[in-house]
Length: 102
Image 1: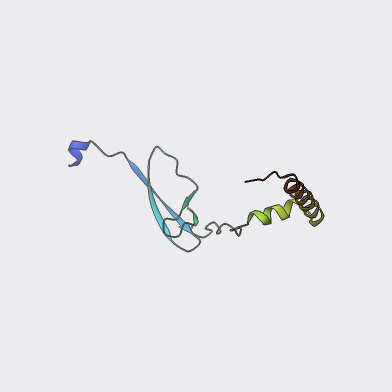
Image 2: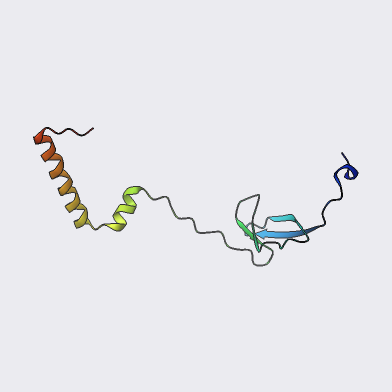
């Protein structure tokens, strides 16, 4: 299928983006569209900008936190001990009364 069957292609502009690992990405946009200031590098995934001399820095990656780590951020050791004591009392009272929890 040639251009005659599909119609004329829309006019395009090309924009070059640069990432911190010195990758160069050329992206085509419609001339009517405004090119975004940043673009994710297709080679490494880092953010890229149009400024070759000052590409954006790599984002800071926070390590994975477990549920326990988040709980420890919200509770002090004293609060945790108090909650554990209450939970154990409740569990022991249910065992004595014959109520089983499944």
